[in-house]
Length: 75
Image (cartoon, rainbow, N blue to C red; front, side, top):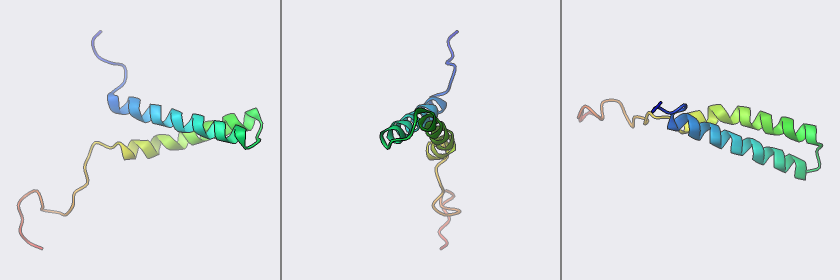
């Protein structure tokens, strides 16, 4: 089996989300919350970080203006 289980982009998004979740959980624990609240805070942060990092690591580059790639000299 030569193909990987996850793409490089999916792996990066999940890794960054897990890192954000662990960081939020540790900071919540250091702030004095209990273990259950810290776990919930970490899970919530990881869940919200997935769409954020998915958009951040998007494969499409934004267009600067319409027609710029076609050599349009207007505007």
